Amino acid sequence: MGTGQLVEVTGKGTIVVETKAGKRHIKEVMLVPGLKENLLSVGQMIEHGYYLVFGDHKVEIYNDSSHTNLVAKVQMKGNRSFPLKLQAEMHFAYRASVDHSTDLWHRRFGHLNMSSLKLLKQQDMVVGLLEIKEDRQVCEGCVLGKQSREAFPREAISRASTPLELIHSDICGPMQTVTKAGNRFFLTFIDDCTRMCWVYFLRHKSEGLCVFKKFKATVELQSGYKLKQLRSDRGGEYTSVEFERFCDNAGIERQLTTPYTPQQNGVAERKNRTIVEMAKCLLLEKKIPLDFWAEAVNISVYILNRCPTKALSKKTPFEAYGGRKPGIKHLKVFGSLLCSCTKTAKTEARFGKQKVYFPGVWQL
Image 1 (cartoon, rainbow, N blue to C red):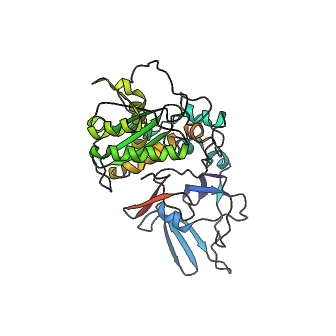
Image 2 (image 1 turned 90 degrees about the horizontal axis):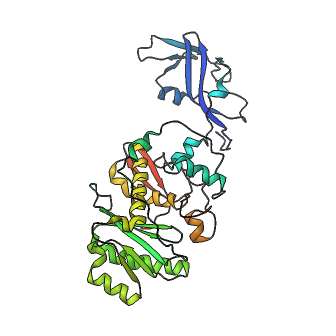
Image 3 (image 1 turned 60 degrees about the vertical axis):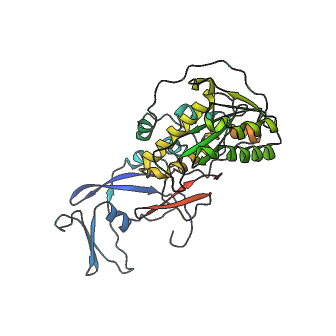
């Protein structure tokens, strides 16, 4: 409000009003129970194609630039306000959409599938998620971003029983578009026991060993466990003499896949596919330039660590690894307009005349 006071908005939608020029739709109407008077925003009317002419103690509202189609004429009162009486149809309450709708949470969770979103609420895996209802609307971001080839066949393998007992790893890239920092690859590490995932960004594949050393030191210090096994493909970044020597000195057992058999490294391959799909959904829906793909990948990993997985029962990877349920109240839709009151960690970027933010916890 103008005084700096915050009031709760319980709904948002469109109302139909009767004017002398016929029925008109007022979009983006907020339902605020705390308000005693209805307020009509001049700025929003201009954004929706109306033209307002002030002068001679009155305001004239037109819906065309030639000022020929008059919608309403309002005289100024003694308190310098312009009271406009409109007759709204009674079905506004049914047209209003709740701010915390299922579709909004679907987009906040990076276009997570509906069954997983429901599971988060039903199993009480996170804090702050409201009721999830069935939404049969087609999501354009999912249609564009989740097209894929045939899935890998299922395989029966043993599971690690403690964190860091087995780490799956794979490098994805090179990407056609270079990021702002000059990166063309991203490297993931997935814990087999908890399915916790970490992501790092590389300019060249040769940086893999340096990143692996940093990852090993970080997770061992934070968790108190020791990294025992590393499963990867036979890419040159994993089979170099320096990489082999480091693993031998650290006592890390290597598990290398058979050539041209990515299915043997299925955990890392499927995780990379899921990450890329979610990142594509985030970028395509908001029409964000592709050189921000690293930000989209980073927030995708952040979100997936707080999403249910078939490998765990009634837990998210975050809870399985860290021992506590993740909070999600800070999540916003990726690429939304920057809000001055946002307190989450964010990276700001400018394209066009708008400022957007990419929320998340950054590892590099």
